[in-house]
Length: 210
Length: 210
DNA sequence: TTTTTTCTGTTGCAAAAGCAACAAATTATT
DNA sequence: AATAATTTGTTGCTTTTGCAACAGAAAAAA
Image (tube, rainbow over all chains, first blue to last red; front, side):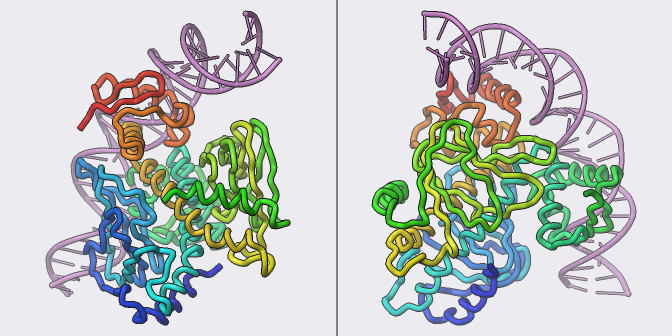
């Protein structure tokens, strides 16, 4: 199920066919959108990477989700609560497709090809999202930093079909993704190395167990 | 968006219209299904409640997800890894609808009404799931037990539109849902009470802040 | 109703994780 | 090429969390 290709083709073909669809560019640290209930906006990240960031009432900033090419986001996926603000922030130069919908399941006009195809693609897009979210939850529910790291490495390893791989994002981002303190995570990585479970040079990891 | 009604009607109407759909009953602690890649099974919980449980290689048991009436589950939503086993276990008497699909997006026969309707309902079903998963992730990414509890209470409070509510599940289950040690959570609840943030009698909570 | 099981509430202690702070290395920017 | 910014790696200390264990309350089963 290679969904990326479908989306790419979809976007290139229908980008200008619907007036409710807009493409915009962003540079580093710019706010792409914030989540406001009933704004009815669906966004597709065409290029670059971005973070879904939460600011709570104390001003604490947490990265809740990380989006990369062809990821889909927007407040449809979220129960927007009043207790914190949700922003999507560009991590570098980004291209984003915005789509304002009245009813996400319905076409805007009888002959609007964009909506027809979007409706067809949507279940797959969302299913893909569910899989990622479940994956993350499985990691987040692990009790210790060690278990989270090992669980994450196992996933990467089985995805790439190799015991040796480069991490797809920085260690700082990994700590955010696993929702643990970075220095504590570094300490645990060192212990995993000392205990002979992994080898690590820079962000290249080799699993030595099993 | 009251999705439950749609599913209820859908199930009642088409339950017997497709030979690829089976309904089964389960009693407490029975295994409803386990997740096996490419089995292509979609399950709808018609009645009762069930848990998605992970057993890792050390035999540790963790509740990853909790399903209640009209929740949808199955390995479509999951990257099934080889490092742990995933079971869905009944928490009491359960009724489950099993649907084996070849291609989840396609009908099994030209005139199969069940599949036609399922295909229509699926995006909504899944979207509903995404919202729940995002909600849970937002809680799981909070740093402390206190933040998790308060975040959870805020969500319940804004859903029920009241500062005073009964918890929808037991404290033991809540600890599992937030993925924290139960006794540590109880301690934190006591502290929240002592600090005057909440009132608590049994599983009834009243928020005293804001 | 009685018995059994599950859930709640509590505590002491040990282990793990978070926080703060800094230097070195790496990567971007000008 | 020089400077700035970000990421990595490390450590000491403090706080939080988990673990184990137990008694009482509540709920379910016999």
